Length: 157
Image (cartoon, rainbow, N blue to C red):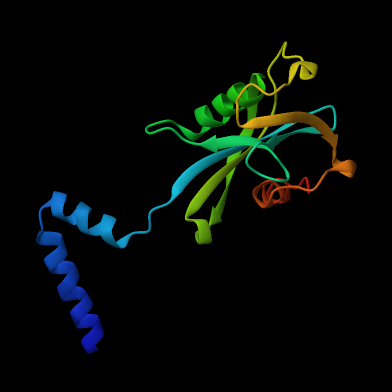
């Protein structure tokens, strides 16, 4: 057995004997810390709802960071409601997109309007949203990189 393998096993044996609280603290020191966001790609009648944020140049999808203890799917639905005033339902499971440079992980959801929701009522509901608009897939404006990637992983871009 090589010296490095023996050292690794010894290290793991010592680690296993440490109190759980200390093990968790050590792991949190070594493990990268990421923020977790939810991006909601809202589709209706062959169009995609996009927003223009007040603090970014290009168009993007509704979404944002999760609140502490919040489930990602709840965050996605909440962000759409808070940003554009629409109720939506998620279609399937999230597709994860990692941004190591920014230490961020986005969970991308495709969703549709909830029953009874009127797409014409989409409007800025938050100070961070300057404008909302529905776009056809063949006439998309310049997108934020995270939104372009979200559309790509969902097979829409």
